[in-house]
Image 1 (tube, rainbow, N blue to C red):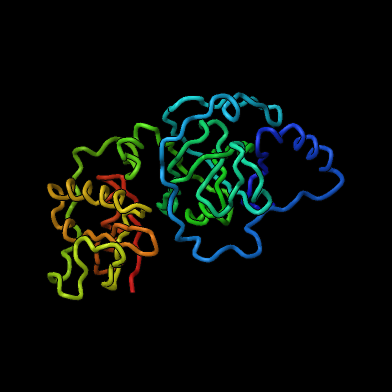
Image 2: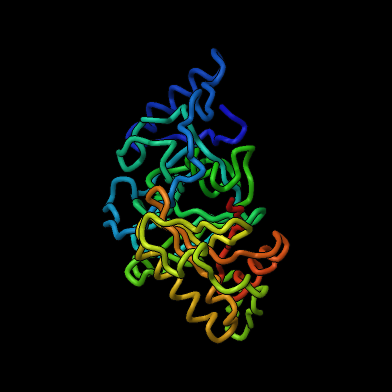
Length: 308
């Protein structure tokens, strides 16, 4: 087992037999190791987030109370909000292909995760406060059954969050059905008190007006942001509608608070992923300063990216 992977038990129907086997075998043989597998597919860092959709919460089954290692767990059985902080771990090849608590095969290369009490199935936003990265995952499994750990991520979700080196603190927030209906999941909420009165200073003055080599404000699908430099990525989506909704929300706020940001927004469509960028900035330091202002007002964790 890798240092990062939690020693979780999977798939509710397997638990009694699996727990007994683990107890009986611990003294006679070394534990089976977990890890990333010998040949992870290329490009996993570009795997899109899970796209939230309303799925009926299972009655009973994986949402019934259960016991593991003498501890009683009572899952939520309704569409409740849930937010918590704690440690995240990840699980990989040891469980790859085995049934999850929903009965689906676990795919370590998909954007999924396990949680002890979140209703199944659910979607959640997970944030790594150490680097500001965020992902959206589908919760389809139970675990991790280790004190202090709040979520067990798939290998790919941990990769995107920068958590493969070991367990680390995260912030987890369940996305409710109402948020999915309203499209509110597309932008993370601001941390702490609402910043209704906060102002977003204008980013650095953008370069000279667009020339023929500068991409249009809203490129057609298949176009990419071609101008080299330092940009901020505000979001990545499978569907263009999600990226456009985020762009429109930023534009509405920026029109009053920071009009200089509006002409810096660009949509791009590359390899089936639609991204919203802002830029280019004169330096990485300027981009990071603008990212801090975006988070303060809109709760968006924009990531600096270098386009060449």
